[in-house]
Length: 268
Ligand code: MN
Image (cartoon, rainbow, N blue to C red; front, side, top):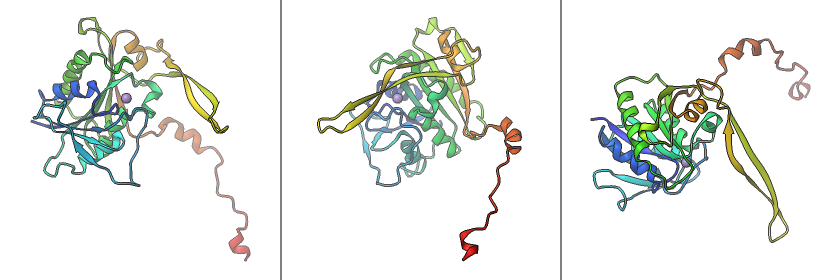
């Protein structure tokens, strides 16, 4: 039985986390390490300037699932567990989610859910991030968890390439309404953020990023946005290597150089 770490960014009390952990017990031994509060949209972070504490949570998880709340970022949770939070446990697989709200297109750069999986990839562990395309925090995650279980079970029988994770987005539909699974690439998000400028009670300005939920290009076939828009589960392979490889040749022709004017040091 593989040892499976379950984490998320919505926090230890998020229903999507419990649903995912319960389904993972059909595949292996499960430990939960998750942020003690909602850490959505915090990106990939490493907390080095203060200690981290892990507190056992017993009120919602069954006894056979050791669950810990950490006062850090989602990626801190993965790092702690993979670096020896449980002295004698070596993890084989990491799953993150099930997130409230999608992680599509450029969302991945903001996502705490995805950062858990990316942190696992840095440690050389296979990992999957799961998100439900629904913005209701207290929605029903049971159908999505069944899909997450199936995708994890299949992935456990294969080898993910090094530094590669799967980013999975599940439409908020009944199982018999979902058309299937599409292997996709990242699509294009359109953010509709609006900067709200206000004045505090002391006369000082402050700024709040608001606006409505993002949309995206749902017409581009083969993308994550297209897949979930059309009722498919989207599975995107994501690489830690952010290099734009096909641009290296062109960039090499740009005249970047180290200026050779006399430096102050030499002049002295
Ligand atoms: Mn979240």
